[in-house]
Image (cartoon, rainbow, N blue to C red; front, side, top):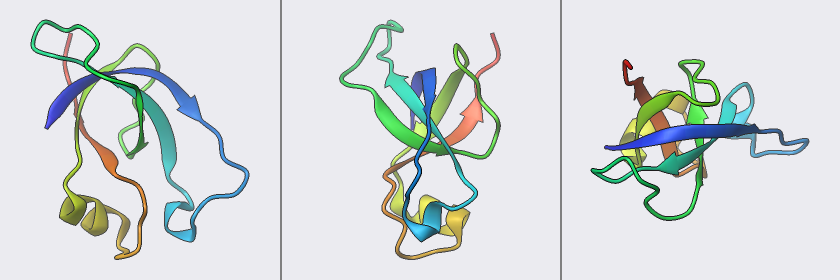
Length: 85
């Protein structure tokens, strides 16, 4: 798990069938000092996080497969929870 800041969302006219119905958001991973930690990443979101929200996310493949109900989902990151401000 790692914390991140939601910096936007992504729209795809064509995407993998396992992502149908899933919201795609762009995350800026944060380090322990709440500073940018690497490049932004794309994640699926089931919680409705919006731009400016702080979240925590995972790259656990089993969690993502269980979440989507598919073994062939190509997405690497998924939102797990929102951090209260």
